[in-house]
Image 1 (cartoon, rainbow, N blue to C red):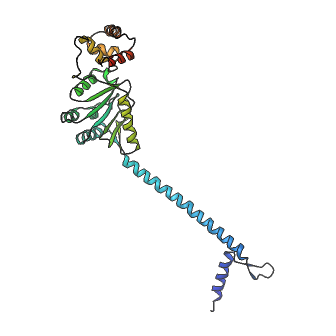
Image 2: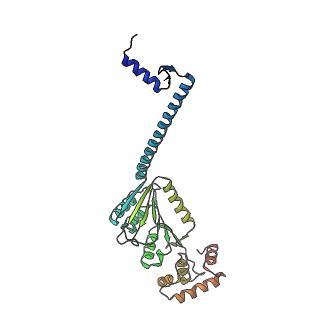
Length: 290
């Protein structure tokens, strides 16, 4: 087989680049390189090349995962800005819920926010739909919000109160949750995020359940009366004490002075043989009065 001079020169250059042949310094002739050493160099070059490929594939994989993660976040969290958008979505969520709604209620509020409205809730409860609402005690210190809560409880709401509720949220069918981020106390527009099925939603559900069991039930209109054991004034006082209201707020609800409330509370302590509100709560529960 005959080769052209150009083909031979190209082949020699290729063998030299691979380290399989070398030129001798004395005669500029070609000599064969020790195969073992030559192939060791070739193998090392291939390894370096594979390492570079591996690094590049790792970089591309990282970029892909980041892109997928960003896409997944968009699917797991939705941001609503503005009272109108929030109100519309909240009404729709209540109207289409199938299992039940669990929510917390705490200040601050923003004007005109339908998420605080009750029209849809009252209609759904009239249909037998379940609402569990955990109130921050500060909510019930304001007469308007206290009457709102009493109306909801009378309509069938399961309500409890805690001294402090750290988050304002509403869990719908355990499939998604509304979480209020910004309200009237902030300089920006009202903002809510909707959290869909994820570890974050699971954590919000667990948080609500934990807060719920550590709270106190709000008395309803159906709470058994204790005529002959406690006076009407004492029963009203116990019901308000159970909400965690301060003396001044209780006085406002009862239409008496804060001094009168403190005197009645002390009289209740004397009746129960206790010294403070915590001990009174324990004693009232033990006697079935709370």
